[in-house]
Image (cartoon, rainbow, N blue to C red; front, side, top):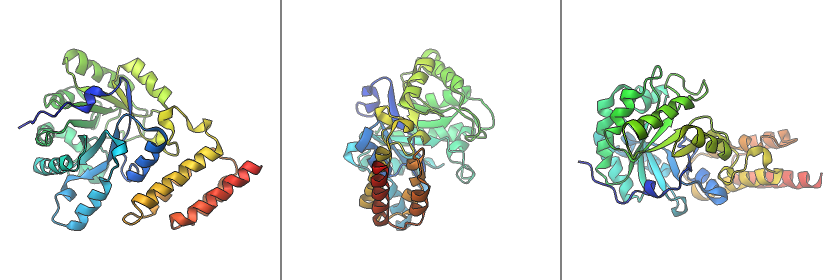
Length: 329
């Protein structure tokens, strides 16, 4: 039975609003802490978290998921994203998220990865609307606002029945990634289709469901242009955030100085060291270093030196020395 959520934070967001896309092995608590420090978005998302692992009898599996669900109060409103295929596991996971204090629950119905889809999860739910609807309703029993992130079709663009079925469950918000599952990220996002879905939701269905567009957005200015052209309530930004924690202040990568870019890298490493170093491989922050160095002259030597590091302590002096030399030149 659907439990009406308390006054939903979705109703109090500005229009338009801008938010962080959930990205596996990227949007962990250290990444989000870095963004929050420099330029907090209107809504934060966790990485996607497996319902099956959260409900596992294995304490190690549960602990890995609980690490992914770490957050700080400064991030609010914070939405936890779940993936899976079994309604009873979503129900149990949603109750846990409620007890952990999350502001909302998002259901991943768009991940195109084969290892996720073969479990009937992610974008595979597009092919199983009855189960998708049961999953939404199971999550709603926790009493938190429930949203869905999905795509415009599986093999080809075919969204009308799919979106209508999701709207029948009355989600608070709907994020549309403007590609099919089979398109992965290999083609430009179909923002014209996102605009058609806005028309379906707002005009044909007369729904109050919040619609968020996602795909190929490169800056806040670019996001605003999508709002103006296609009528979405908000825009979700993903890969453009790599190396640019100041994105939500309106800064693009090209406008930042060497000092600003390197400071962002150091703060990311610091947050990783404080929040995750005891439980998470250094690899997960190390793989982000290159994105901070894009566009920096003569960064090849620093990039190579950082590639040889194995701990946060080794990173700080290398970056600080590089910045000092850059300032003197």
